[in-house]
Amino acid sequence: MSNTPPRPLPDRIRPQSLDDFVGQTHLVGEGRPLRKMIETNRLQSILLWGPPGVGKTTLARLIAHNTGREFFELSAVSANKEDVRKIITQVTYEAPPDLFTLNQPKVVKPTPILFLDEIHRFNKAQQDFLLPYVEAGTIILIGATTENPSFEVISALLSRCRVFVLNPLAEDEVRGIVERGAGALRVEIANDALEFIIRAAAGDARQALNLLETTVSLYEQVTPETLKNAMQSRFLRYDKQADEHFNTISAFIKSMRASDVDAALHYLARMVHAGEDPKFIARRMVIFAGEDVGMADHNALVVANAVFRAVEIIGYPECQINLAHGVVYLATAPKSRASYDAYFAALDDVREHGDLPIPMKLRNAPTALMKTLGYGDGYQLYDMDSLLPEALQGKSYYAQNVRGKDE
Image (cartoon, rainbow, N blue to C red):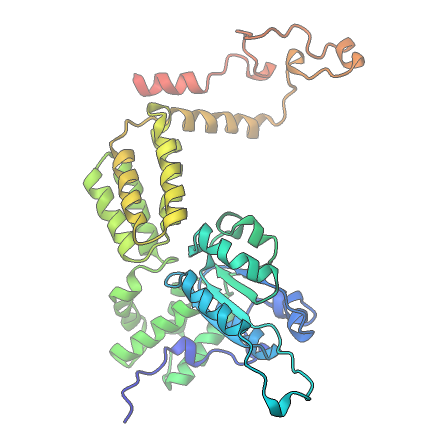
């Protein structure tokens, strides 16, 4: 009897052809761009951007299978430059000539595919290392990311890739996948349990199948009650799209806002331990510095940006030290939301009043005609009068908010 554990359910029922693939019809439906690229075998490096469990890995494997290309798969969470180098060495190595085949026509293999899951977890130096091989066509890169590639992928690499956006799966699509999974597990699912899984999955097929498989392994029967119990399992608690993820980041922000350093460090440690993307944490710290510390400490935004940059360059595990440094600074800093509140008060007026006429003295006057019409007339350097549109004269955004906080 084999001691090899069975493959996870999502892997066991992974589609083997485009016709079996569920969802993303805007990309793989008849005549759609990704399908045409596969069918014509005119591949280029691409980035698949979308939430978890919507088919990024499956699509990458289908592309390789349907185009007859060698397929290498790495996860940016654990891979490094050396792993990439080994693959490059393997695909560029030319065997010594065989005397029996010297006169035979040379068979040119199609360019191999390197699939890099969670490419946003590669730092700038690691992405720079990939660039020349993508540029030279040594490999076709397929990167998968849950983060906006405009922010997470260096511009030089991004410009050499075509970005395809994947959407969360619709309820009917998740339903079909779960029913396929139930068939593989040979288990019956009542309609109320099926609907429970669909709601819990929120468009994530992997989450739906993991919940189904966990429930069957623990309770054999699949009911709303056994599903609720299974969801308490530790490995399902901190999913990046589930409630615990948002609860933890909420607790983290509120702890810094309350200047509770110990609590802030605790929730930071929970996120790091769970494998949260450090750039996600650092990005929230940059937002917090502007929103909650604001003008009370001018250095807060500088520190938060420095932490983000350090995270970007260093990555795990060392960058957790930089995160902790930044958290302590932001939690202990004085707080002021005056600039934040002032801006949104101004935005409310813009939404209510629309584009009010700009005062004549503030208008640009590059031509004689505009000067004749009064554009720029009366403007003085360091004008102390209100420069707001006429309908908003007397309004106070920032000063009013500062006074409001001090009173």
